[in-house]
Image (tube, rainbow, N blue to C red; front, side):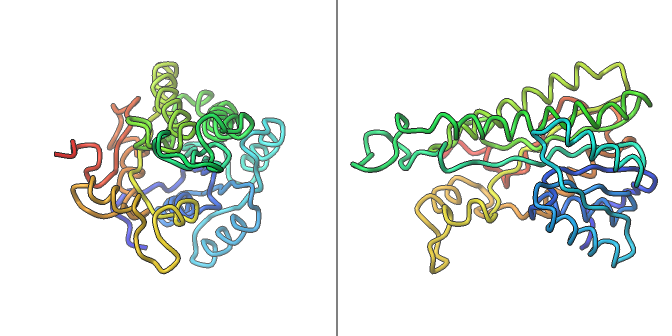
Length: 280
């Protein structure tokens, strides 16, 4: 791929969680292409092994590891393997996350709900809990484990993946919106907590991207936009979705110790102008 910034991460060990997905897989590939030694972590072992194989086939350094970001003991084992294979972690990208249908309502507005549809009152408590755990605990636990390397050496960078709905919640997905708001808040907390250690912590807040998780919400089976998709594009000044590779400039900038040496506690929107538009 064509990298957006000419930043050299040679000698850096970068750990990317959620790297089995398209978005974080792209980030992992970009770091490898920029010279980093990349540890790609995901519950989907096949996906990260394939990613690592592709990177090595292009001459880059990347290893894939099966990892559940909610299981601390197992993640400690992965950490030990990463240290042995690649070295201590310099940069951690907390990309694991997602929503769950059990934590989603069928309607944007309660008064529009029809019989048989899932309303706010029908949300599954276990589903809501899972979304919070995956997004918040799935950021906290890897940070507890991999940031130890950074604290020991008094340098490093943590990049969390928040969302634009952390600023203003989207309809239908209350748990995911609230969980991402927690990630943004936690990013600021970490930035303050680690300020004296040389560790910086920032986050990206991607706008609307088309992914396997949300494709059915945005497009009909025939490929035409859904009503929700049209509302999104109408409310986005650039009138388009964000492409995953368009996040890489922000990723590289925030993770570079020279370019962003004084930047910590920032949540950077990359949203094609969505947050700037009032609707009028």
